Image (cartoon, rainbow, N blue to C red; front, side):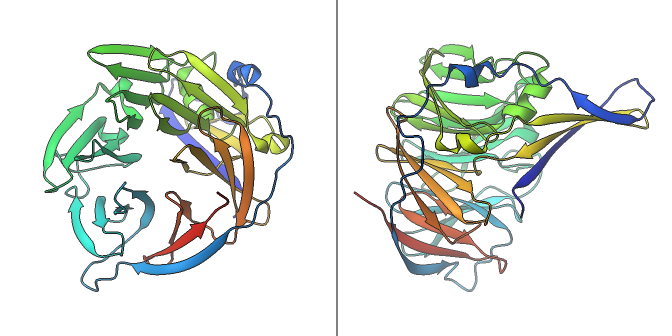
Length: 341
C-alpha cells in the first residue's frame, strides 16, 4: 500500500466527448480557520502491547470480511463483517453473543452498505446504511430490529452518531450543508465545508465523525484539521493536526468517456479510517511512508496535541486501549495496549 487512494463517483451527463482534466475543487475555508497546534513536531512515546486472543474463538462462528470493530463500555466488541453484511457481538474475552442484521438486501434489517455503527444508551445498536438511505436500530439485548428510519435519497446519511444526552449528529454526502443535529424536536443543518458543487465537496471533504460530551468532532481524511461543532451548528474550535507537514491539496480529476462524466480525487489520505474518543482523549490514526500505524493523541476538549506512538500493525483499529487487527484469514487478533497515563 502506497498511501494513495482513489475515490470514484460517476454520473451521466449529456456530453459525448472524452478526455480528462483538473476540475475546480473550491475554497477550503475551513482549513484557513483552523488554529495552529502549540507543538509543531510529534512527541514520541513508547507503548507496551500484549496479545490477548483471536476472534472468533468459537469454531462454529465464521467471519468473512471483518473490517471494523466497535467497543462497548462493558468491554463487549461489535465486529462489522462486510462479507456477510451483519454485525457480530462478542464479550470481553471473545465469546460470541449474538448478531445484528439480516444480511445483504433492501428489506428492513438488511444492508447494502455499512458506514457507521454505534451503541446508544446502552440499549440500542444503530447502523448507518447510505446505499439504502436509512439508519437501522436494533435491540442490544435481543438483536431484533426496532426501527428502520428512511431518508430522502438526496439527504441520505453517511455518518451518524448520538451522544449520551440524546443529541443526534448526521453527516451527509452530496449535500451543500454537510451536517445536521437533532435534539428535542429541533433540527439544525450546518457545515458549508466547501464552496461549489456539493458532489465535489463530498468527495474531497469526506471524513470520520465522533462525539465528545455534547459536541461533534469531524476529521476529514485528506485535510490536516480537526473541527468541533456544538448542537447549534456553531464551529466551537478548529485546529490543524500534527500531519500538517504532509499536506498537499487534493486534486479533482475529471474524466468523460462515452458520454459518462466521472471525477476522481487524487492525493494522499493524511488520516486513516478511524478516529476514537477514549475518555478525554481523541485518538487519530494515520499511515507512515513505511506503512507503520501512527496514532496521534489529542485532548478531546481542546483538541490540543499531546503525543504520538507508532505500531507495527496495519491494518488495525485502536479504540478502548485495545488493538483490533483483522487478518487475511478472516479472523481478528485482539491486543491490549498500555499508553502513557
